[in-house]
Image 1 (cartoon, rainbow, N blue to C red):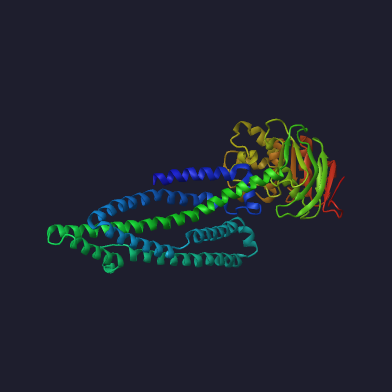
Image 2: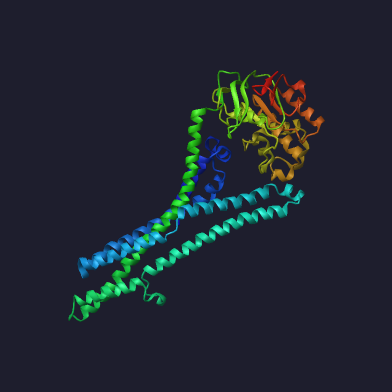
Length: 488
């Protein structure tokens, strides 16, 4: 158990580090050829893999010693002919077990994938519970979950049936003198024959004949069981391969994404540009599904200039942000973002999405995300909340109380919390992706006025040209020309 815990700790730490480095948690879930259920592989399947690995040590050592020692003793009693008969039997057993053994690698991999699909369905229902309840979608969700669970049960039944057939075969060729139901199985008949040979070689020696026959019976049983145990190990190895395949898939997918990154390149944090400046040089907006949304985009946005990106849905507004943030590769051209030497991304460009991320914790950590534990900056936190109209929230909840904020705050309040992070971190540039959609028109104008006074230049994503007085440039996407965009 201690060995299993140790290996589980090391495997989980390694895979978790791999998953969370270089934003793989995003890329593995969204890119073609990625891993949509990496969370399950890290959290639960690593533990199973560690347990299977640790159990292999004892399962290999004991039958190996039994096979070597008792084969030698049988050679002493019966000579090469007895060992040859036993070896021939074991070879026949090998062929039978090989034919009966289920393909654990394929069957177990499919079972894990179906388990992941079923678990994802419940996670999706938990996350979207309110929407499903409003739409009275309970029966439909039940139907979907029943179908997923049915596929899992059907496959599991097939897998267990094949395992049962294999276990029955193993029992048939193993020797268990305590089981009266197997008193005439093949190993017992073989043992009886070899006992007769041992007795014949010592005819007329009385007690020695009895001892030889008894020892032969025990030795044959140990050798046969040792050989059967070897195939039990082979069975476990096959299961281990099934679990290892999914772990290897995750590593290989991450390596493939890294190789793609080296070929294509991503947005570059450029110390030669002014902090907050953004430069697109003949860049094309291409999705991971290889859909081109805009061609040869050239835009030089100064460090103090603000930009509004307009256009209907699905023309590439959010995709443009993903290129800037380094989430998507730049297939053509270059994207450069100005920064200072050694500065992190939070201090350079900060994104406020439409659906603000509100993890559980204290109100202080909610505002300072992704940083935490900044109790010495409570005054800055309060000023940021006051700037977005949430001073009353701080008075009501306090900064120390831990809550599940998605359940406490309305959508409008969540969007205001997202904007409060801009006031707290005061980055060189803020990027607003329709993040005031749940705020009233008057409230939206007040937030933009506060941002303008704070001196944070912004890039705003909007379906229409709104509040033009707070923006110096406009980029229109989805335009009917050869480049699918216009810069004003």
